[in-house]
Image 1: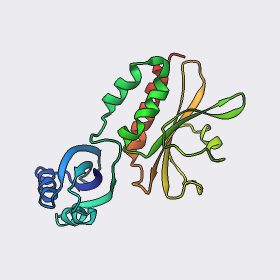
Image 2 (image 1 turned 60 degrees about the vertical axis):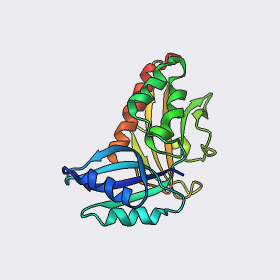
Image 3 (image 1 turned 135 degrees about the vertical axis):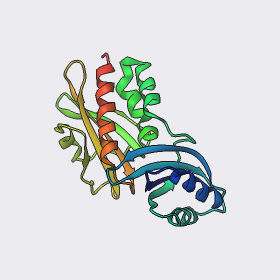
Length: 214
């Protein structure tokens, strides 16, 4: 079973190597590492995809990280999107392959690209809220969703009571015909969306909107 670990560590030479050594000593194989954000306080936030053996518990991995000076684990959970981290360029390739379905393709790759549990794209059709595309795990619509079509920029959304403990982010855009829509992504239990992730989400949605041909 793969796990995704989000960890903050000092942005200095050797810190990533020390982290890899600590996790390896705890019995985990590192499959991939991706930088999520470089912070102004001299810290870097990384997502680390791990494949620990069944007898190694997540608590042991957290303990191994916290033995290192200045290292803090923000979040760890099972990762079921596949044993890889999908990079932004790979996502762009997916939705530019078929410009007639660019937005739908974007929604398909959102969970892997942004490490979310689900994604959906919403617009209005005949005055009614309409799901343009949704990942297979996306929840049922809630009344609050109607307000998201009025967003002016990518942002973190307030939690929705019906989606307990799910952190949300959304990004609005307009297609070539000027029709507005919004892409919403959710994570069950966290971690919170970082400003860099929200900015990436906004850029990715805008790019897909510019690619969509119909």
